[in-house]
Image 1: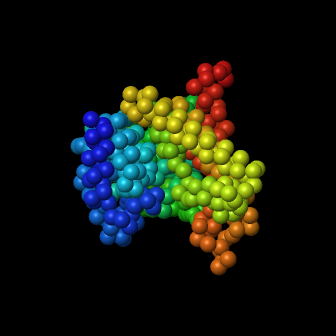
Image 2: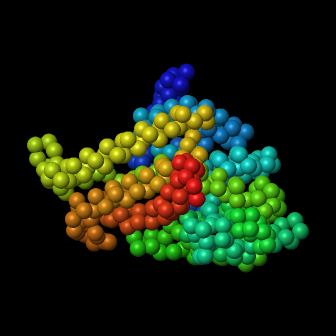
Image 3: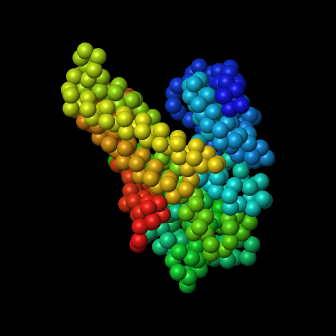
Length: 387
């Protein structure tokens, strides 16, 4: 059944996916009202995938998905890879808040929010970290005060990815300052497009601004958008982090293979990399990458729901971020002076891209929970070591 599904999916994708989009590795859309799909090929492909329920293939059909089983979902991914078809929709809606709402949202909350994620109407951002609450997230100070049918949100968040493009935010707020720090926290959703919300992008060393500061001054969150129980948001927050780490662990830099970089910059003779030391490093990296992919695939197959959203996600997040950091260091070292450009005609687009990835991935072992936090989780939750 799964095999025939893959063939049928590949045939449909081969017919519907424009040649201009194949093999690019880029997602078609991140969703939202602030960034439109301005390419006709991308728009047609997105609409076709959405109509089939394949923007969120494993979600129930009533929320815009296709209701695929774990096996069918995996087969669809393989079929897309066979054809070179891009992912139609990515972002925190599909990877983080959507799966969390499926588990913890009320029927009304699911019906109101999930279809708008599936059709790309609403883009989400994450309100977790604060200037004084990063790795120690439970020390957060942003407060939500009861104002009748809504909460008034006051405080600030930082390192909020894509907040300048987001329509809505899922946010951790303190609703009881007298409770222990892991209690008295609630999980709320609210619009970013309202008075009292200020967003300031943070320019990074690589020249881009994926992260923002967010300031809330009497911003409003409807009580209909309190997820779970009041003062019991920490459990939901941790569950969402497992979805986040799972999505991060599956992400790899959309740049050239390490071996291609080696061919161009490290010397190539008699069908192999000339320098034996570099050759050894490239082989080791590629073996580690392949072993990681196979291990993650096995973990998904061993889970009944086909996912890896358990404490094991910390293993994958840790290894992926460290492996990616090693990759970028290796690539830049092979490129020599061509790997440290910030602009100018002497650097190609690929070279500038590799430099930006190298600089950007410096944050990869911190974003989504630092490597130190992941090691602590693995020690306690996976290995069962004492505190």
